[in-house]
Length: 177
Image 1 (cartoon, rainbow, N blue to C red):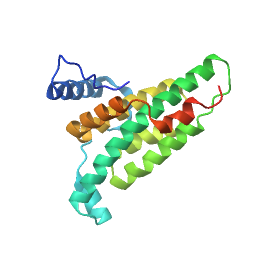
Image 2: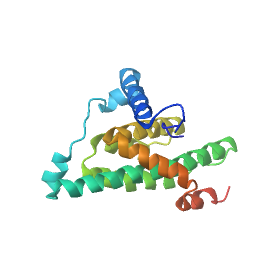
Image 3: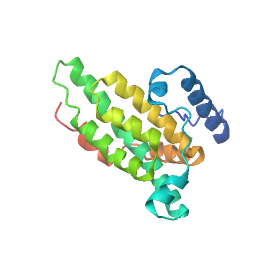
Image 4: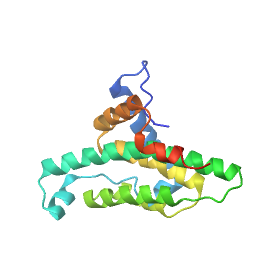
């Protein structure tokens, strides 16, 4: 599910470089990244600092919380997508509302912090009912979130993986099948 594998064969720095290289390769060939024009996007704190009138240190803290929130959300999104795939295989009507709600919640934070590539991907996730496209956008969301601060992203993913089951995810898993 996550791009970081925490393999004993690679150091943290090597794994970060590997994931950033994968993102660069995706930018060369991925139609979604190209159509959303986010490959060349580089986040800076300046826009958020200026528009929100909050000091750089506070924006940096908020950005790290956003990164953590996105990785926790990716865990829940994955569960939701698996649920949608199960419902589709059973011929049930697909309900994208919980997935859309979670994308909307995270979109608000991305907008507040002026994280433009995250905004575009979360908007796409929120407004589509194509499971394959959603999965692809979630994969891209992970990459662009890692790009914001690769070192912190690595630490947060490791924390989410070690924590394992997220209590918030329980309501999605236990929903009536």
